[in-house]
Length: 458
Image (cartoon, rainbow, N blue to C red):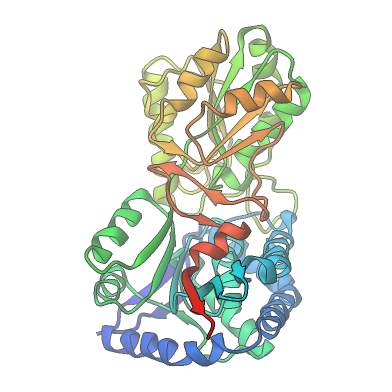
């Protein structure tokens, strides 16, 4: 019997949307339909696939006014920020622009005796399991290059952003992409795991929790199905003595607090050289005290509720535990903080790595700030983590940043910026953050397999 998925709006706790899940038999038919359609899709000219995907992207843009309101109601992001279409289009456009080169044959030799080359072949059916925090941008990271590469795609979106997959399917189908080539599905966890175990997909891309990633790997055990995983993060920032202090504070605090701290590569811990520590904290506190917590439909609101009460409960718990262990909280609890999804942002000092707030993923509007003596101490602290997605270094010395960056266990090194995904670079992580890589030329390589041709001429 079908289960009902319910999106609970963080604005007021009401049910914003609900959809029935597919049964296992229905979902297996969906996967079979995608598999049957894949060969015909893959033989279409590359430029035709590119054009159809970009036409679908443009149609999403035409929906943006509705999308912004839906996102506020589904996951709490304030309407003043205008949605995700800028990044959504940027990522799809870049992947479209590099497709011919990225998917082109790798020529080894072509002489009188032999023609040797390597082709990129689509996997087949790609399952994309997307998260709620940036539901359009995270989905398009894989959906666009997977379709362009000649795969068919099945999208399973988060229950918290239940309507996003429907929007994307509507747009792509209106653009002319066959329904069997891109399908949105509603599935429960058990059905998803059973489909994976039964080899219904040829590649899986999952963005979500470490626990979710483990469940994907367990389900796929022994199937040899490829899996790309982007899981947790605890991204650090390090401010050196020659940093532009104002820029560092503005950028790192925004990176910690934007979207109520619910960013994959949001800043969750900051290390500041001793000589700048007091000034950094003073400026950071002033910025956060200027935020307005409230209803995301109000254009005056700068920080909305967290997407779900249980997410806010975890962040509150981390803050309370840290304070009980000696941390200092610098931000007073706002009157709008209801003890539920509406959570006051917080800056903590006197923190240590014995506290969960400096070790576990918070994924909320809290950041711990620690004083460090030198690069060696900062590097040791940045590496003292189970996660490795990004690290943000603040200095005017690019060679110093490169030298430090080489010693940090992470997927991306930023210098004098943070919390940004450049589609020309591989989006990847290490340790418990996951494996694989999206976007860039490498993203195409992960969504295809190599096939070698060794042709001896008569």
